[in-house]
Amino acid sequence: MPKKLTKEQIERRVFEVLAPLAGIDVLPGSIRQLPPPAPDILCASQAGEQLGFELVALDDEYTRKRLALWNSTDLAWDRALASWPEADQTQIKTRCTGLHLSVTFNEAAALRARTQIMREIQKRLLNNDAQFAGELFPKHEMPAELTWARVFRGVVAGAGAPHITTSSAGSWCAPQIDKIKEKLVDKRYEIEAPLELIAYAVHDEPDGHVDSLTLIKRCIDTYLPGSRFDRVSVINLAFKQLVYRSAE
Image 1 (cartoon, rainbow, N blue to C red):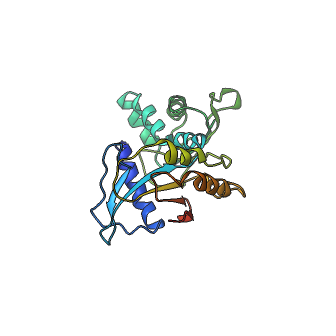
Image 2 (cartoon, rainbow, N blue to C red; image 1 turned 180 degrees about the horizontal axis):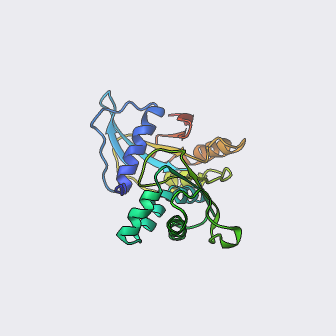
Image 3 (cartoon, rainbow, N blue to C red; image 1 turned 90 degrees about the horizontal axis):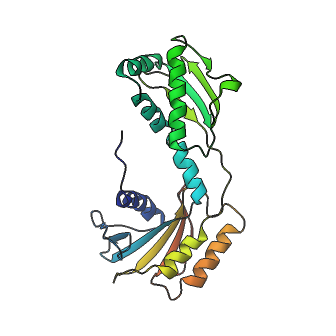
């Protein structure tokens, strides 16, 4: 199982993607990360100027939770598989050769519930014919938190694990503008270099509604003056686009 990234590792990776979008020419090897009250990122520009950056994600909490659960599908399968005796694990893996599993969960289903569902699916694979294909559960036997589970055969290569697809369809949520205000007003930073705030969204586009970017600009115009920050950049990370930058 891949090792989970630390908060600092995530921030560094995000900054490395955001920096060129914000027009920041970072000197290679100059990125540093110190504990608070330092900002998230300290670095130097190619011109040798020392710079500081604080990062803030604007995606709605519901969006992030929904997508985190969606991304836990393979982990749920692996945890369920690990709960079987070794001989059964081998049998399940054998029956997953060339198998495509299409599942649809209740979007709010937690990892524990998804793992239990995956174990029920694996049980069906063990109990059915080795080349079974089709719907795994009659409607009256469908586990709670699951609305669809179907096996397809011969459509993918490989052995040992199924190719799993699942969906997570959510509507656009307004960006968390209060997060920008919190950084500008409530947080305190110790840094002598110029400091910039980079606000970004991966899923809930900051300009996804006719009024959303207007409200973001209003927040920045209201709270940037008098703050520790010199500038704010707003980035739509999904489209790799700088959508707004305050005046310096």
